[in-house]
Length: 72
Image (cartoon, rainbow, N blue to C red):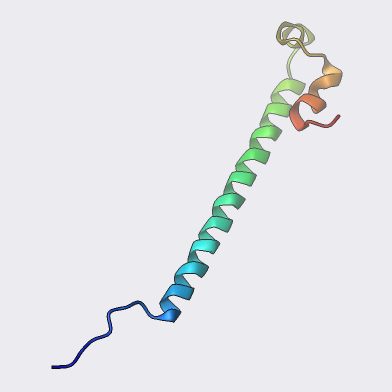
């Protein structure tokens, strides 16, 4: 009877760690792209609102960029 080593090999552990970090990288990249696209869409919507609509939500046309992109 021959004994079979069932413990994961060192290579398997390293490959698993690499794949996990690659997955994490692409998840963060996707979230970052989604956030920037949402900010761009929000900015476009606010820029195309009328002055009365902007007044209703309590901002002026000059504050749009600051409100969207947190530049102060």
